[in-house]
Image (cartoon, rainbow, N blue to C red):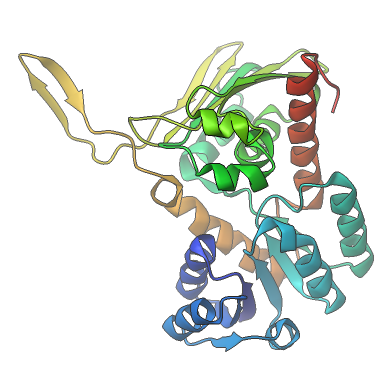
Length: 327
C-alpha cells in the first residue's frame, strides 16, 4: 500500500482524495490544509487523519500529493523532498521560473520521484489519438490543432493572481502539444485580447488567445483558448498528417440526437473539467501509485513541468512584444 498525504483540501484535492480511495493499493493517510475545517471534513470522509502540522502529515506517509495554492507549491515540494517522499504536484510548480529551477534542483539532489499534474495525457480519448499517431496511421504529423475553451470566465480577482492565461490555462495545452508533437517547439508566437470581460483586461490579462508553435522540422501547432464558451467545456484535438487526419471531439452531456422539421439538435458539451476529465484524473492517480510502488519514474515528470512552463513564459513574452520568441 502507498500511504499518501494530501496537501490541500479544496476542489482538486477532493478529486484526488476520491481517486486515492478507489485505488486498491493506495491509502489516504493524512489531509493537511490551512483551513482546518476543510481538512477535517475531507479526512473524515475517507478515514484519514486531519493534520495541522505538515511534518506530522508527511512523517506518516510514503508520498505527498500537493493540491494547495500555486504560491505554496515550491515550499511543499521541498519539504516533502527533504523527507524522501515521492511527490505529485498540481501544475504549475510556481509562476517564477527561477524558483522552479531551484526547486527542481533540490528534488534532483534528493533523488525522489516528482510527477506533475498534467492530467490530459491520461484522458482515454486523447491517449487513443496518441496511440494511433504513434502507430503511423496518418503518417508523419504535419499540423496539430488544440482547442480549449472554458464555459465561463473566472473572477477578475482570481485572474490577478493566476499568472495569466498562458500559465494558468494554456499550460495544459502546451503539455499536450509536446506530448503529441514528440518534438520540442523552437518558436512561439502569441496573440491575445480581452474580449469576454473588460475586468480581465484591467487585471492585466487576456481572455482570448491563440498561439502558434513551430518545431525545428517545421511541424506546426495551433492552440486556441477562450475563457467563455456558452455551449459548454470545449476540448478538442485534431492532428493532420501525411496520410490522413485524427480527431478527438467534445464530450456531450448525453449522446441523444433529436431530429425535427427544424433540423438536428444535440446536447451541449459537458459543463466543466471535473466532468470532462473524470476518467483522466482516475488514470493519472493509477499511474502515479503504480509507478512509485514499482520504483519507476512517473510521467509527466520534472522536465515536462519545466518545458511547459518555458512555453507559457515564451507566449507571455511574445504577446507583450508582438514578436516570435524562442523558448
